[in-house]
Amino acid sequence: MNFIGRISASKSLMNRALVAQSFFPDLEVIGQSEAADVKHMTEALAQIGSSNVFQCGEGGTVLRFLALRLSREQGEFVLEGSPKLFSRPQEELVHILKQLGVSAVLDSSRLMIKSKGWRPQGDTLLVPCGKSSQFLSAVILSAWDLPFDLFVSPQSLGLSLSYFKMTQQLLMNLGMNFKHWDHDFCVLKNQTISKEQISIEPDMSSCFSLAAVAAISGNLLLSDFPPISLQPDHSFIEVLRVMGVPIEISNERLKVTQAEALKPVSVNLKDTPDLFPVLAALCGLAEGESVLYGAPHLAHKESSRIQKVSELLSKIGCRVEEREDGLVIRPPEGSYRRNFSFDPEGDHRLAMAAAVLLKSGLEFDLLHPEVVEKSFPEFWFSIGMKN
Image 1 (spheres, rainbow, N blue to C red):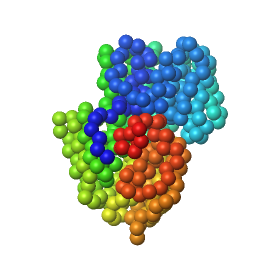
Image 2 (image 1 turned 30 degrees about the horizontal axis):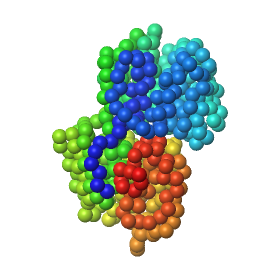
Image 3 (image 1 turned 90 degrees about the horizontal axis):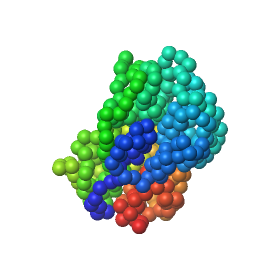
Image 4 (image 1 turned 90 degrees about the vertical axis):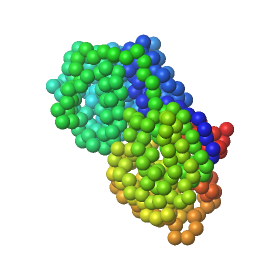
């Protein structure tokens, strides 16, 4: 691979900024993304006031953010999506909406909401965060211009706390004010935006997928790369350095070149679970035992990622030990295996992990490579495997 260019805007930050823009249409969001999740969010928000049925595709952020956004409006709304989306933890939405005086019914393929706007039923909104911090992000993203102070108490907040902090910092950059008491906080009433525009950073998860391929096969030069980022996944830079990958950042450019050999690592992924599949693939090619831990919430992503990554690495001959919060990965005792098939089961990051192995020279059949369209439609073209 030899890639020179820039990466599309972060889909996570884009979807958060788009929710803010839906409250304040004069806000200019600078950045582009062809990710399916961003397309679904853009189309859904544009339909507010003209439709009561909204398509979420397979986007967890789309469903969760949109549910809270629509609940600010008066009316009846139906949010539809794939069976896989609704097989993930979503019942927390019903619990949150009930506390806000909003009726919600969830089944295997849709969420039905009946709302007269937010009418809190208690002094404090209790938000379950044990499986995902996205529910907490969804609440504060739609807490603009409330006629009351909103007191929020996160429950079991710890996993993916960094993604919530990313949401909160984005909103603070736009002008939202908070009062804090340990993990509890208050969104003050009558919040309004203080910015006319917001620029969205490149997607760090996508940058990592390209950097990982470059680390084992080629070169990468990314422009407009921020030395400091709102996105927790920016930490991939230090992980690659520990693995012995030549990597440089200067003048907002990221340069990655192929490593002579990959060193094993021990990485706590509590705050960066989205790095897990691609990082695990790199660890499968490293010269020694790697330990990836701290992320039991991987079981609630687009697939049960610990199990599926273990399956992929076992197929190439790695000795893999599954743990509740991650994997222990050892290289094969002999040569790597080839000539098998692997189904990412709709998980875009598993397909990218498989791509790292394919670019290392291993040969196998990756089923449904198109699943990368969820977050990074240009991925295969960027690594020189498909146009």
